[in-house]
Length: 382
Image (cartoon, rainbow, N blue to C red; front, top):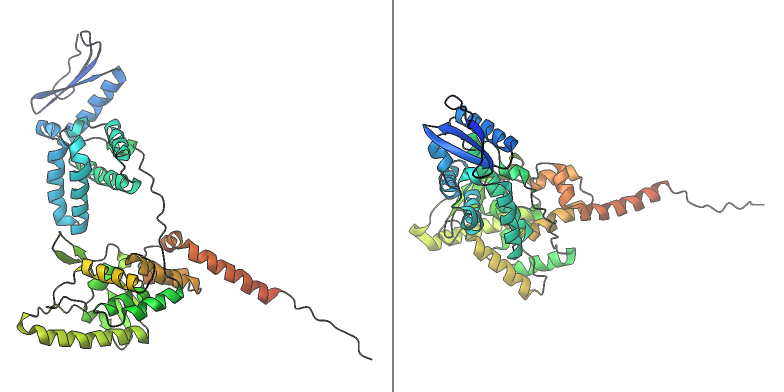
């Protein structure tokens, strides 16, 4: 017989027909039922459900599917998150999560279901990084469900986060870097490539630069925004992802000369565009003053590498090359950290430890030169 309780306190009893324990609670005048193998399991479920009901959970909330919840969740994120972030959440949801778990009620999704999803993705040949990003997307969605009182616990907390091996990037040698800059001379994107290699800025940061960010007298370039893709054919300017990303970079005479030459070329482009020019104060623009197409910059970069017989690296590897060079010549890690826009020096060390090893070797040689006694052959004179 069921143990009856007052409204919203629930009931717990052994169901003889099913041969298992049964727990029930009342939500908004409707009854929810949970069957479990043990009395403890059902008792914990009652406690969890009652806590959620006290937090405002409605019967409708218990019936919502993951598909419906993620749809509403993503719509709300479009207001508070960056376009790139929302686009990635949507992409991983539509491609991997919803086809498998979308029709399940949020309340019914268990850690086992998540693990099975990851196993399925791995068997289909998906990489650890992709599975990790699915994990992040799900964790954020379920965290919001907890805030709204729909869930009491995040099932992702009981699932081990996929481990991703550190990506080994490829950098140019000093000779290759010089060869690249020579090959890029005369390209419409020459100044972009030069600044990427000299400053270590990300492509989005470079394409988000405005002329008002340049302090010509002090030789300083301010990074205050970045260009982000908002869709397949649109882009927006957004603030840096972290506080450390908003920074000032000191420029040398060569970089300032490149910018000045680019400014003069841009004046000619403006003259040709005439009334079609859209003034946005951007340093790097299309032929009519609008945002630069990032894919075209990458294609031009690849073309220059191929024609010059250089390694087929990514545009982002120019940043890695720049930062590695700085560390290789003994620039203090804290200085490199600020220039790179890393939040902590430990981030710089984790990513560019290879360059620090080389610096350590040089340091060892230098300290030995300083302290090793010089053998002097003293001969008595008569």
